[in-house]
Length: 258
Image 1 (cartoon, helix red, strand yellow):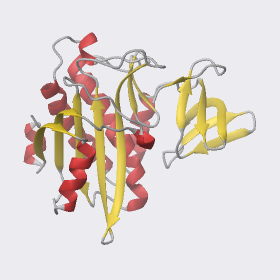
Image 2 (cartoon, rainbow, N blue to C red):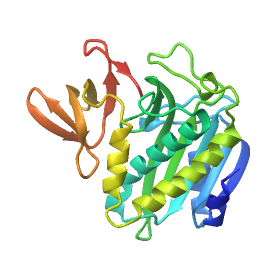
Image 3 (tube, rainbow, N blue to C red):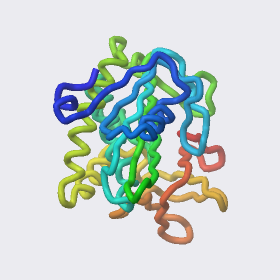
């Protein structure tokens, strides 16, 4: 189910029927000395998770996959891999559905939206062992279904292309990852990556609310700084944020998209 180019580049695939989470399966492979470039896909998860330890519903029919990378970059550059992964996710969804920006958009920092409804998310985790950085990137893509009665809009690929399948999405994702990761590895590669991400960004130029530990911050989303931090124009001036939960809609009743 990996693309021919991905296999030729040394990427491998493990398929499981059911796991706790593909992220934990990838961590277990790392503990056992796996050399990386490993995709792990599960037909279902019983303990999937998203950012901040949130539970990720994982019914059969959707794509649950993690990518293990060993020593992919210097630790300081690791957060940029989230933008690389987001672009790969967007490219793959375009290949499968035929949709493109602005209908298909990336929501900072980790979601893929179709017509402002969450359709996929990703999770980036890294750790250092023996002076070497290892990264696991988890992808969850709604293909056959999505959660119901959520506090935010949700969607799935078959709503837009009934023939969409797990296999097709995984093949497209492995191909897109290879291309986006290779481009990012070139000298100055984050500049083009950042520009490509902004071309596909949701809510750019709109008023958003970011939930921070110290409370909500409201302002206009104006872009990404050269290191990838979200830039906002607020009543108190310009702010650059490393992390936070982005809400959109009316400031008085924001709709969470992650």
